[in-house]
Image (cartoon, rainbow, N blue to C red; front, side, top):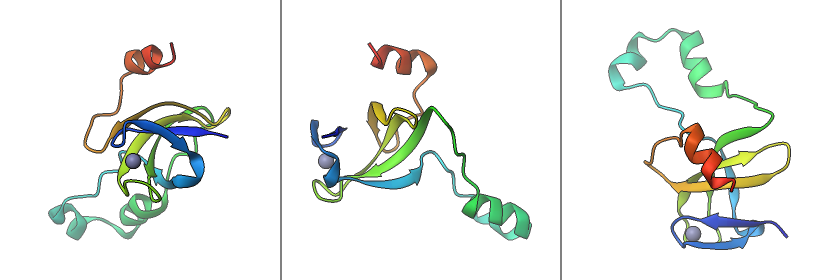
Length: 102
Ligand SMILES: [Zn+2]
C-alpha cells in the first residue's frame, strides 16, 4: 500500500485518502491580464499542463483526512513521493529535492 505524507496532519496515510488535484504552482493571471489576454493565452492557462516523465510538482488533496490541499514532488515513473509541502510554500530547489531523497 502506498503511504503519502500529509504536511498538515504530519503523518503518512494510505493513498486511498488522497486525490490528485493537478499540476502545482499554476498561477492564475491577475485581473488586468485576464482582460487583455488572447483566447489562445487564456486557453493555455486553463488547459495546457506539463506531462513530465520523472519528478514533477503536483497538487494533492487529503479529501478523506484533514481536507487540506498540499503540494508534492512525485516521480511519475516510479510513483514515489519524494516530498510534500504546504500550500503557499515555494517550489523546492533541486538541492532540497536531492536532500529529501536521502
Ligand atoms: Zn491531512
